[in-house]
Image (cartoon, rainbow, N blue to C red; front, side, top):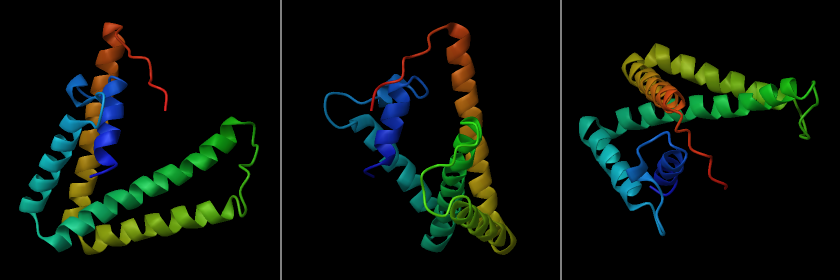
Length: 146
C-alpha cells in the first residue's frame, strides 16, 4: 500500500497512466484508492494461498528481470563490470534460482502461474498501447526527476 500507489503516480506523471492517478501536493490519494480497489478485487476473487502464490510468482519474475538488468548495463557499457562482488556468478545464480522456482510453480500451480502471465501480458499491452499512443500524438511527457 506504500509503494504501489507511488509507482502508479510516477507513471501517471510520466504520461503512461491517466493523469488522475498522478501525485498531487501531498500523497497520491487517487492512486492509493486505485491500489486499494485492486487489492480488494484480488482478495475477494481468491483465497489467501492462491493470492500468495500469484503475488509471489509475479514478484519473483520482477526480481529476476530487475537483476538481469545488471547484465544489460554491462553489455551496453562496453563490457565494463558493475562494481559488485561476485559478478556475474551471484546475480546469475539468483536469476537461475528464481526462474527455476517460477518453472516449478508453473508445473505445480498452473492456474496461478497462468494468472501471473496473464497479468504480465495485459500490463505489457497497456504499456505499449499507451506509449505508442503518446508517441503518435506527440504529447510525450518529460520524465519527472526523482
